[in-house]
Length: 626
Image 1 (cartoon, rainbow, N blue to C red):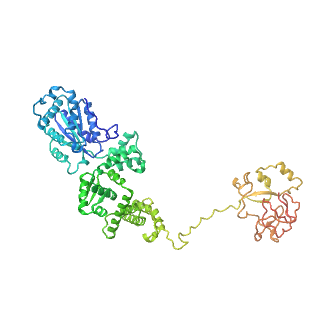
Image 2: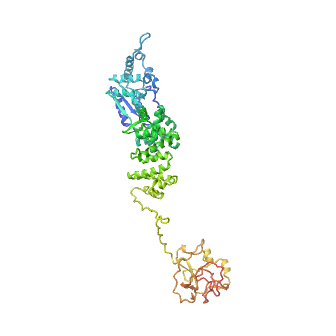
């Protein structure tokens, strides 16, 4: 059956999302019409919620069942709208396909008087009744809020004449365009009293329906951040959500230009004084109190009331409670605010901040401290924003809202260095404010840490005792001479450097002519058997001992030195001195052998000689190590 396609108002989801109860109600009405009970359904919702998409789904199902679908659209042309335009468009397919006898049978001939309006109404009703005798007929009238008076009269006539025809009339109405003096309001009130008329109201999408709608558009599930951003800004509006999805997250969160033009067009059509009041209300927020708006604009009471009434009548503002107003949609408020000039925006924010501060000083605050901080920041009053931000944090803590309090403190901290004498203005210190932010940022249920208050220039925090060092092993790789053991191998400086136990040819050449160590004496490695305490090829020298290794019971000291066969002279505890090589004339020194009884010179270090070389000359008679 021929049918005019519905107007495309933006991206269309491939499948209908949600709207199951509303679609069931429409299908029941269509089943009643098919059974011979005529009826009408008024689908009401704001712009972009999905009225046309729901009606298009109903038309597809009616067409699939073999019914006749007729669609007509009302045009927004002001007072110059063509009369009967939606009915002319809807009945055009019948005129092309119907027989000439019943469509033009009652047309007046030449020279005869024309039809009256009542005869015209009756003729249209007869055409629809004749079409319904063949198949069920679904008549869809889109955007009834733009219909002319003649079309509204014809619709009222048809709905009153409905008897037993297989006819269902579905009309969509945009409720946000119905101001108090709109001509459709009395018509809707009259139609609502008819028993054959039903009303279906569409609500915005919830979070789950919005997720499914975005998935149908994009082909995949949106990420949580995108879903949350679009649902908050669009407030469940399908058209706004589709435009925001296509625009993406760019443009610093600003509205797409096409969407902003659509939204703000209603404000541009208002008178100048009304538009100025709406712009001032946008600076006050999505919802603004009447007293605050009047004081910030500085206009008289009568002027404010007239401008507000005009804005409410135009559907831009709604009455919110007993003492305030709210924008009809969040995107409308956003579009109006973004349309402000920079200087105009700063001036209005400063006016709101001044009014709120004066009312708070007088003991009758018109807004919260958080709103005062917002207006102060936007008006570049850094000192006022800092003071108000801390006051907002105090207020949030009194209300047991630590997350909001932390947010206010975090916004106040960057302003501290920009405000001269911030401590005197706020009555606190930067350290205390930072500690407060850290405590508020702790997870819920965490006990507060003990604050550290400065008691002096160097006593901000009590000294933290250092943990005791781990005990160091006395057997920390100290080399000394002792009796040879069967499990140890002789170590020399060359083998320590090369990490090999066997002598190299160069070592054999250097040791040629030197006396070998006497039997019973060798160089042993005392200490841990772990590889970390032994020399390696990368670092052949053992770590220096921190404490002396345990030694056998020494003989009675003699001039600070003790001697024993097969050992180096051992210093007594009273003769410890910095480690150094002994000095003296160079003599032939055996690689390792019995120590002499000659005491060292005064410059000889009273330590066990290690593997390091020294430029000092050893004492006479002192054996030379390898």
